[in-house]
Length: 338
Image (cartoon, rainbow, N blue to C red; front, top):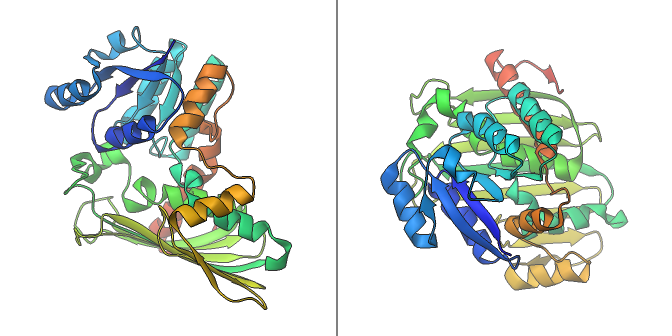
């Protein structure tokens, strides 16, 4: 029997998840959708042969739920799905702050339902390959990381996420809504942060919606990173990341977050560059056959086992985001990371 899926929310990010589902070998079917904009829900439903239904009716028609609404709605819809025993995939960030995210973790764990959070950078070949490079004893200790994340402000263009200019729905701006990915991936690669300082700006004039955030992160390992997150108006640049890492005996640069290229050089060796299929082949040689997030989630639902990354895995990045804003709100003061 195919796994029956329902979507709360039928906007841009829901469509992105259906692309992952299209490449997922686990048998499934999108059976229901609910969206507060009827036209958008109807368009989504027609594309996948699903029914447009109310919030409550959706839960009678599905085995698992994708929560792809604006951020402030996540806790309520996750609680509703978990109370009915439904597996749940929730987009990032889980919540507008870490305290609410912690309650969401408790909700799904108490209900005993399979749960996964949309921290999808962990599934991308460039970041997975760099994780292998950093684990190579030849690399030595990580010294410094320069991480830049830029995207045109997503209240326009292909995103059309008008809600992201409303702090009641989004919580905050670029750092929380976009660079929560970056805070997660930095800790996934380098371990916990010990202390930080940060500044944020609201250049577009949207109160509490930061469009520039710059943070210095000191890691327990001794590594230091700078993270710059920018929402601009260059519509030809939807979203991209560039990362440079210096280790004692290794240099790495990620020049494209989806498929590379990744440039790297160990002491005594020539620089190498991998991207696309060559990058995926290099991962397979290391025993890492990358799956997409939908495959991991649906396989866990099918087999009744935990998914990865589960909601709990999102808490370090949520707490770090809160700390970044606390530093910025205090004029860039040094803050001990939670």
